[in-house]
Length: 528
Image (cartoon, rainbow, N blue to C red; front, side, top):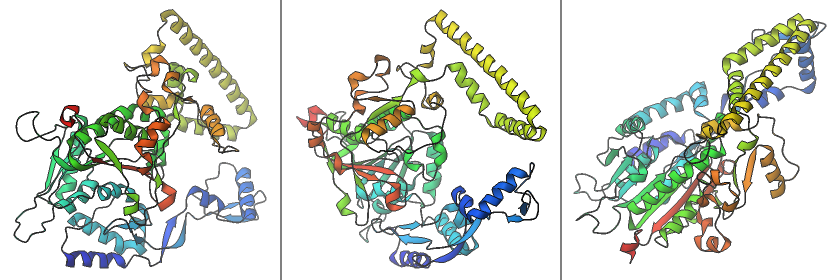
């Protein structure tokens, strides 16, 4: 980092340069697509014929598989292959930053990268190195903190961005200084995550770090003098890396799609807005506040930024930073977007969702697999029995559904039981079960707006062109603030100054960053 002695930093960079830009041979795991396509078509067809002809043969436990005649062997597909890679490369827009081209698992398991793995472990434990997603290092860079600054990280855990900020503010530019003048207040609302934050910062052992645990949206504005008197804000820089739906991380964590829901973004929008507005209040006039998420959803990004600008009424303004970061490939912010939500009217009943959940759990899936294998061995007779059993299950399911409908008609308000006090489904997680059953994705013939809207509707989503089109029972969840600004508003907001980092542009995750400069107090009384 920037707070290290020059000789030590040069030594660390010299060690890392041994793995930078130089290709070495490593053994990597093949993904599913590569495993399916590694061999030629003839071998693939022979393997398919052999698989269909053999009875319950285990491919994992045998070294080769025979075809129907038994006179031709097909080799089992390898799960790894040799590839030349350059393990690390310098990041032009991050001072002293490097990006690894191999994942954590590959670094740990490859003998060719054993030296790099050992070096990473030692330097991380010593506090000389912090490992994090490349794009998550952008917010501290655009904040441009300086030695001696007072900095607040409102949602700090696990602490990688806090460590990055500490490198700068804890510097002592004068030789007569005994301790740094700057400091970082690292806050997290969850005590368990705050404890993890303490553990992370303990490696750095800096006297400039303070850890607090309070909800970021009510973090107090501490001012000198009497209560309510004095200039608004006490921090030179404020970082609001708010909780988000995390859809920008799906490249490294595709499993999150199992629970993702548009209702999750809609539910987080008010919280994100409250945290960001409080961050603006805590910033000194002339200081900067950075808002960031690891989401690509405009409801969590540009919609929040636009509402901040409305509420501030000229007290804050967006700042362009892309031109100050050479090598950064980023897209401008959006000025228009679609507002969608799940269509609960076409969803299953509560009883059906519970039954579907039971059928899809791990235990039932295992039983289903065992039944399929048994039916395959017994032949057509058992298949007919299974068909009869399925008919019985369908009859029972229809009977259960009819009972549910009858009970709903008697009470007249059963449907409202799945809605919370805000007039929307009780949780974002439960809304994931409201969606239609998953199916194979087929790209549309056209990518124009009409085709994409049709695709969204086929997935069980409802499009709202404006707030007036939102049903009354949904207006506490689909709020007016999630809709795009009017063309007149957009012309004055300069939303294009926001930074959108897409995974395919720089071989990273997805990320959104917006930098605000505070030019006047947020409170109208102080502004006047």
